[in-house]
Every structure is written in structure tokens, then in C-alpha cells.
Image (cartoon, rainbow, N blue to C red; front, side, top):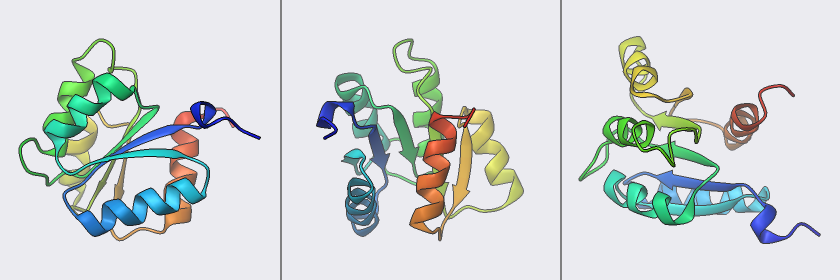
Length: 129
């Protein structure tokens, strides 16, 4: 039996409550621990306490958008090496470039399939497998 503390901790930040609940439920069913935040500012506050293994950030959020949150994560010494996946409805090539330039490891667009998201999380966390 895997101890809860041994499971990967995913911090999901998105302002869409329904999506947060959907992601939380689906990722937990697949063996992840999940913390959620409904804005970028809260995600940063939580990350300093929780130390997630990976961030999933939406671009369009109140208080601090996903791109700014991404930049702040990359400039915070204790967080800068944590992988970041941007999950956004913005799907234009320039949007993806902005996300990667802000420091995201990968950029996925909405809508998405949960299995693809889980696969992407595994690829980010274990690039050699």
C-alpha cells in the first residue's frame, strides 16, 4: 500500500470551480494527492507550505494570472525547479510561446482528455521513461 505522503502532489490553480473539482477527483482516482487554488496568488501561498511535485496552472485567473504565477515560481529559489504545466483555453501558437517563455515545462490546451493529462504529468515528472 502506497503511503499518502509518497504520492505525487499536484497543485492545480484554475478559477473554474467545476474544473477544479473534476481535476481533483480524477487525479485522486489515479493515485495523486491534489491541492486546489482558485487564483494564482493563493496557489503561490499554498506552494510555499505544501511544496507540490508539479503545478498545473490556468492562464486566465484573478489576482495573479497563470503566466505571472509561473514567472514568480521560477524566481522563487525553493520552487524554481518544480515542473509547471499550463492548461489553458488559449490555443494560439503565440499563447503557447508566452506560456513556455514564462517558464512552463509544457502547455496543454482545453478541452483535454484526463488520460492525456495524466500521461503528460508522468512525462514531465519522469522524462527518461
